Image (cartoon, one colour):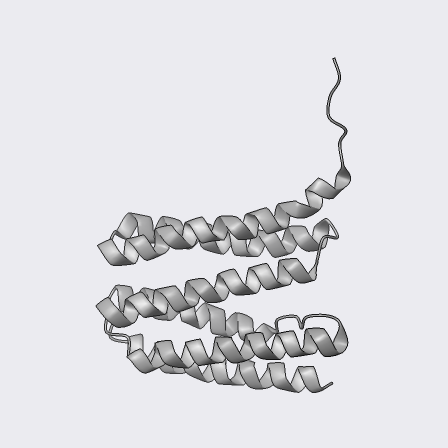
Length: 175
């Protein structure tokens, strides 16, 4: 009885598959927002976080960091943030300018990243301030979902981190 030959390269795709799983978890998250489902909200939020942390960890551990993985991770994260902010602006009182600001930022980020891919041959990596922006974006999601009094304070802190992160990215690209 013969078996298929094993290829070590298949393991290098595991981080990308985990990134793709975040699309499903993100869909559940959006569904939980639309239906105000508390259990699904927390489960999908947890799974999104775990898959986001796990894909990068495994990519580094398996020596499978790639431009495709960076793009996939970035696009899925930003798609989730944009989708959630759109639903929050429709149903939870998030100001619409926040959604449009995020949309413009992400379009510009993609254009700049593609420009540097062509010019330098590789995509820029994320910065630690961007991780703080992601954390505060999640706090915005939670505070608006629960309609907490601190939601606008958290929102403005997130916007500040968004601008600082964008500035840090531009500075790092010039180096």
